[in-house]
Image (cartoon, rainbow, N blue to C red; front, side):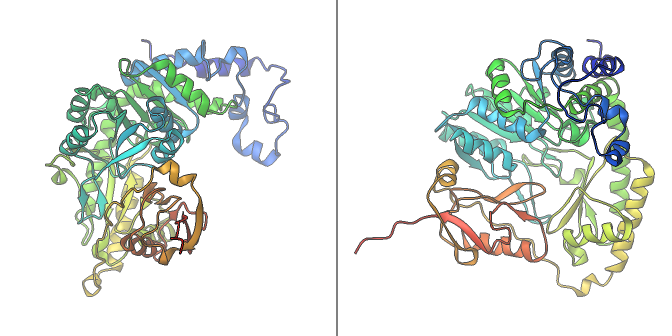
Length: 489
């Protein structure tokens, strides 16, 4: 296919050049009806293509023209049989994957360290999650991938599962042996769904882990906006035919997608696909070079550690994406949250995320050597200012066990509930989410039994200022739990 073409982007520009007289939404009509200061800042070009699904521009809900052409080009670029554009991020694409194959009572095998969108879809579907424990790295304080061994055990116990979901790569860039897992699951005629939110580049370079489509997965939700050069909130859902009904996927996506689809976001996907198809290998390899050079320099800084190839060697750490720089700061005697704030205040550096023990910096095709030099300079200064860390008791790495799931997430979410003090909630069944965002991984989800270990872990995160989110009571003073029936005397 001719990947130099951008059918949707070109159609939008041609339409704007005609200067049509608009009697349709959006009401700003090319910016004329918009706040002047905002209009001048955004610019005439962007506003001229902020349009709706009129006939010349096709309709994302039932594409037959330029959007369909753009999606076919994307499918070819990503090695899929069909690709669907999402203007509601990868969260919407992940939900569409699950809702396409799961219904009420269906089992879905998922890692516990999934994004909250996976659990949202499980609630909407009324499905029953079968959780796999990711391998925990007690040195770094993070979860890695799942093992083929754990998937095999889950399939032996639940051969009637509707799907298996795999994260490839994790937020921190770690990959399991995806091809081996896909082949195993397919022996049971069960589809494999892949959360590929952090893998937009991996399909385009041999220096990066195998992509979902290369591994033979059935569906993959890929955040083009995160690493592939499109605008925030634009993603794709890649699908292989066979175990998946492609028309049903389109129907489910249409149910989830706004009818006021953003054409600037769609056009950015079309253009990002062109760049990835034509220059993806070159861009990815340059990005890997920059990241590896920076990783080596960070590892020369006292008391800082940025893992690389040495972390590989077992099923859960089969491969990794070197463009993710996970910088372990525990030996400085500070939290990742402290490091994030220090970098922001002192060097105007913004990181992707911080957790109790690490900060994560993403290196993308948009980076250059100058920005990475500044990061290294800042980290050297951070280390120098904490050179007495040997006198500080190192922060202990603690990760709670996966809670017991007592009710399906849907039954708990819609069940009869009451409020109780969070510190006194051990043993109760929670009816809402508690998660750390980023990366959006649940600590507790509806239907799980709260343990004292969970309570201590969450309070610890709150007290050091890490972004614990989810409960209706944002202070996490009280928590919503399932009402317990008491004995009648």
